[in-house]
Amino acid sequence: MKDNLYKYILGIADNSLILGQRMGELCGHGPSLETDIACTNISLDLFGQVRSYYQYASKIAGDGRTEDDIAMLRKEREYLNVLLVEQPNNDFAYTMARHFLFDVYHFLFLTELQKSKDLTLAAIATKSLKEVSYHQRFSSDWIKRLGDGTDESQQKMQTAIDFLWTYTDELFHQTEADKAMVSEGIGVDVTKLKQAYYSKVNSILEESTLIIPESKYFQKGGKQGIHTEHMGYLLTELQYMQRAYPNMEW
Amino acid sequence: MSNKKNWPLWEVFVRSKNGLEHRHFGSLHAADSEMAMENARDVYTRRNEGVSIWVVESKNITASNPEHNGELFEPAQDKVYRHPTFYELPDEVKYM
Image 1 (cartoon, rainbow over the protein chains, first blue to last red):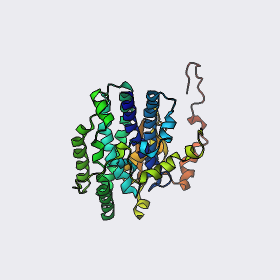
Image 2 (image 1 turned 90 degrees about the horizontal axis):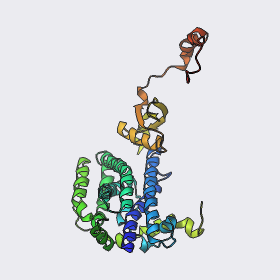
Image 3 (image 1 turned 180 degrees about the horizontal axis):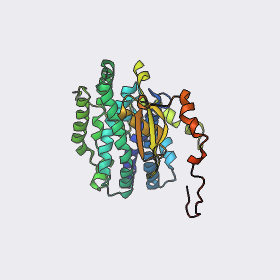
Image 4 (image 1 turned 180 degrees about the vertical axis):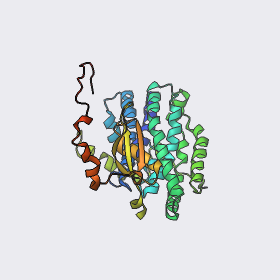
C-alpha cells in the first residue's frame, strides 16, 4: 500500500516536473518577451505543484529523503513520467503542441483526482486545477493561432502534432500502482479519461483546421522508467547543481 | 518571422484590490485582445498584483501633446482658490 502510494504520487509529480523543466528551458529564449514570461510562469506553476506532491511523497517514504532529494537525485530509470512531457522544444509549435496534449489530459485527471479518498491528493488537485485551466486555455489558444494561421505556421503545427501524437496513448496506460490505487478509491482510473480526452483534443484540432493524425502506433515506456534518448540530457541539466555540489542548499 | 515585430502595442491597466481604481501598469505586445489579456496576466499579475485587468490597444488612446502643455496646464498654476485649502477640517475626517 505504502509503496504503491509512493509510486503513484511520483507518477503524477514527475510529469509536472519534467514538463516544467522543458518549459523552463524557454527562459530567455521565448519567441517574444511576453510569451517567454508566460512559458516560465507556467513552468513555475508546475514546480509549485510538484513541491506539494514530493513533500507528501517524502512523508510517505519516511526514510529521511527530502522533496529535493526525490526531485534531484533519482536515476533516469526511477523517473515515472510519460514520454510525451520529455520531448524536446524543437520549435515553438512543438512546445505548444506538447503542452496542449498534456494539458487536456492534466485537466481531466485533476478533475477526477479531486474526488480521491486521499485528502492530501484531493487538495493538491483542487489547488492545481485553477492553474491547469489557465495552461489549457493558453496552449489551446496557440494551437488555434498557429493551426489556423499562415501556411507556414499551420504546417509547423501539423508537423508537431503528428510527431507528438504517438506519445498520447501512454497517458491512459495503467501501472500496477495505478491499479492498486484505483481499487483503494485513491487513484484515478485513467482508462476512463481516454474518450473525453480525444474528443476534446480532436475538437480543438478541427477548430484549428489541423488534421487529426490517424496513426494507430503508439510509444510507451515512460511510466515504467524506460525513457526516450532525450531524458538523459534533460536530467543532466536538471540535476547539474546537486551532482556537481552535493547537498548544496540556497 | 517578421510578424511578431508587427504585433501591436497594448496598454495594461490593473486594479490591485476591489474598491481601488485601475492603474496603468505598463504596456506589452500582442496580436489581439485575447492574447493581450493572457500576456497581461503573465507579465503584470503573476506576483498576485491584481483582481481585474483592462487592456486597450495603445493606438486607441488620445494623448495630450507636450507642445500644448502651456495652454492646457499653466492656467491652473496661479489659481490657488481652486484648491479647497481654506476649510478647517475636523480631526475626525481622515484621508482627505
